[in-house]
Length: 202
Image (cartoon, rainbow, N blue to C red; front, side):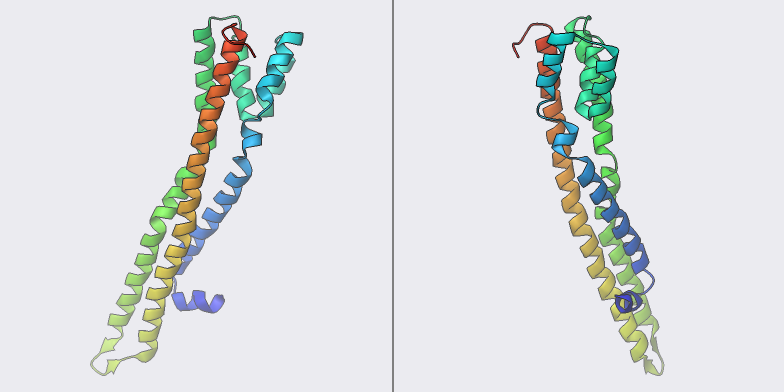
């Protein structure tokens, strides 16, 4: 592995850094963006049952807000349970925007890495080509410098694609996952408002 890095020259270190950051972000988002953790499927039923049995309390709201992102949205709405449905929905929308921002965290960075990795590979290719042309002199070509320039050009191009492809796949996957979770939480929150104000049976 070290021999490959050495053959690829100094431009490869930018790609190694990008790959390390991308791997860390992919692992972090994989652990965070789990459906059961973000929007537990039984949470709405549990909240409605708790409301019917005990009503809203500060302890219930605190526990709900810390349980999950969907729970924090529910808690925000239930703090305005005595207000008109429109005000309750508005507070839920505000909490939803905050949760959506947390779900989107780091995705821009991951998408940027996916976009710039081929460019970093192209930069390494250009450096390699400069070394190739720089090795030409009146006495002829230097085989060692020529071979090194070719290695730099090819390795950086290949590694740039190796970093870019998985990063783009992960970015697209997480982007779709966030959209799906956002829609799911929005539907659950609307159901809660309708149940609380008697517009819907649980």
